[in-house]
Image 1 (tube, rainbow over the protein chains, first blue to last red):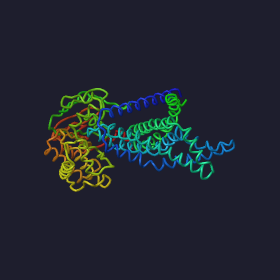
Image 2 (tube, rainbow over the protein chains, first blue to last red):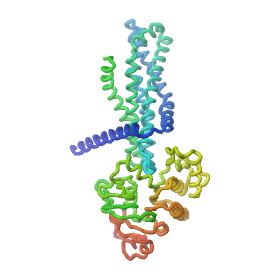
Image 3 (cartoon, rainbow over the protein chains, first blue to last red):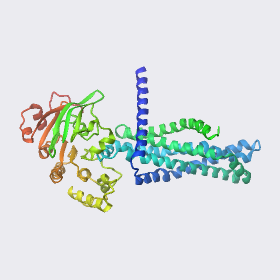
Image 4 (spheres, one colour):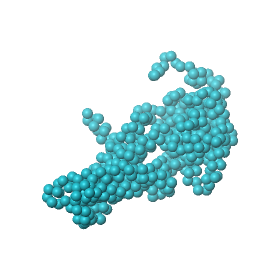
Length: 259
Length: 249
């Protein structure tokens, strides 16, 4: 039992070490090697543009349900017009970046792990290396940069759609006063709240890209290996996003003067 | 051109190579034979630095590729072309994109130059007009040809072939052998072929080395090999199984 537990701990630490080395190699590559803009643009399109529907639906319905639930609570204490302010702050600081991160981890992280994993088991990554191409330069860097750019943009869209949908539900469905609602939302949602969410989303983009690429490049043999890598990429990215979100909230909250 | 000194490699407790040493001269054509699972492909991957040895060294034109990190070894790998057993074509790309991959970052060539070179090399491997096809539309033999075109388009000094005729019917296998000979003679490259197909070995090798029992067991010209009285070599050439040996299915 102890031996098995020790082995698991050692394997986990080794995995963490390899992940860190991959992140370091990617950073070195970004700083020293030339980025292929064509690859970057393609990844931006695939990860950013094509993720919009799922992210926008998530943002809009989260804003709607949050607005409705908040209204139910606030209505009993006659604070109806504060509903949209709660939606605004919650969407900017937590729900926007976290839910966008989770949806992108599911869509893009899984696709990255599956694509790179398949390349690994069919020797395509070895073929890249024989063609004097570093796999990190070709496979990891464009994906990492694309998600660093796309995730904040997707998060901003999710926040905007969440607040917009919350406004529509609050004003047109629940009958909250439109002017006061909007005024309170602008008054209580600060630039720092928005900055907190956008910075978080930048970090989450890196987490999804690095874990997705790492799982793909280190997947086991055969279809089972690729399947497992894909599942692990989504699970580990999601868990890392949720855990790091807490620490980012504390650190950035202090840094931005929100806490 | 290629020097291997006392190469050792294990995967966990499984020892695959244990003290392999040999030299290959520039322009020479060498075939490495051995039974399935004897470590031929592992040895080939060491030559190009895809695997790192546990001990020993691999010198390419005097440079120790086994001591280099991944980024340093890219420079030495420009001397190589490699045809994989599975062809390892990039399945999301067309034939032309696969073949031209090495020129992806070469700004000295215009798209027209690249297209011309792709057409030339596809002509050389008897696949003219297939530029726009995807790997999934090609047969096994055609994939090998595209893999070979991708490996030789940038005129490497050394071409490595990992089981080039495995999985092909005898006629297609012979055409691939003829193609390898044609490439060798036209591009004048150092050729290293790993195979267990004795027809290929006889056709392609100026020298044959046999990997057995984790090291180079025998070496010689094809004629010396096929006339060898050594029981291990003879058994392999004749393709006779040992009834006392355990075979796992």
